[in-house]
Length: 423
Ligand code: AMP
Ligand code: GLY
Image (cartoon, rainbow, N blue to C red):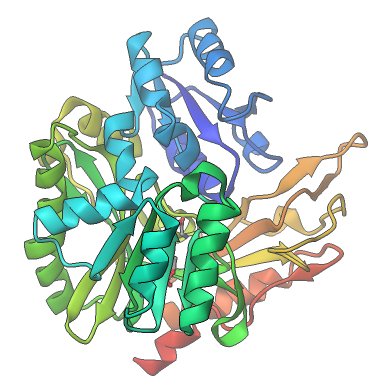
């Protein structure tokens, strides 16, 4: 089989490694990929949003399966384009990817089908939003409706701050058209858990839980990032929480999408908040999480191609989705200054020690320079993952492995997975 993976981050590296384990796969292409993915796949310099060029490439190479890792092409309808040309593709069609592409859509869906989530209102007029904020409970969360690189969510602890957020998003267009509409939401407290799942339009199978660390600094300080590290499973995701979510959230979401004529095939990522009133949905994503994929996929048993095929064919009920009974921790090595501004182009050393069994080095922002050296090429540079018998062991191993790698301006959080000590 020939597989094309679309995307260029640590998530796509983790997907590529899982795909490589399949006996069925002969060749992996990745567009555009990165210097790490280039070690196991043939990277082609086509941007993830250049659908025409991707399609031409897929046809030329006679691709058997395309796997879309990123949100932008999914929300933009890449799966519909590929399928229309007869290319088998893993991921939701445009009418289902809207689950991530529009927060107003997903909130209305949850309300209509009684799926637990924060109370909210949607607005397409800034004046009405500001009027509503005169009397709304504070703190409040203001969210741009569309995709905004994970930055379109503003938690406001002051009324004036919330009004300013509305103006920034709707009038100054800080996130472009993503802010034509906004959601204003009740502020929730609790621990966050990420749960990824495979879906075939009717059946849903849950993957091992994970927890991300979104803030740039230790003890959850500093700006929001794409994610500075993860661990899996989450010890806070108890049997009780799992039972509740199975009863009220997971199947309910898949059924709701099917009932709306938008069957969801692919990965649904449930961002959950474990509130004092029980688990509630913070957000849906229509793809694997990054860096959640880096701690979940190394522990997936069996052949990921069988699972993806079953999602496409609607036969997921007959394919097991199982994980090894151990734990993984991923510490992101970033460029100092991320997520605001940072330098690129520094050579990276120490990349050859990872065995891809217990220790993994997932590349995110890396590239090869003209001399053939692997250099830093982004804010998040590498995801250092270790697998161990439990979270404590995995955490120690992951932090030990972060020392193997060096590059100028290397920055990481020192408290990824520290929360497990509270259990
Ligand atoms: P989202 O992209 O919707 O997941 O939001 C990004 C982050 O903002 C989440 O991971 C939470 O940490 C935070 N957040 C979003 N919505 C809420 C809410 N209603 N209450 C508290 N925190 C929230
Ligand atoms: N780690 C959060 C995300 O992938 O959106």
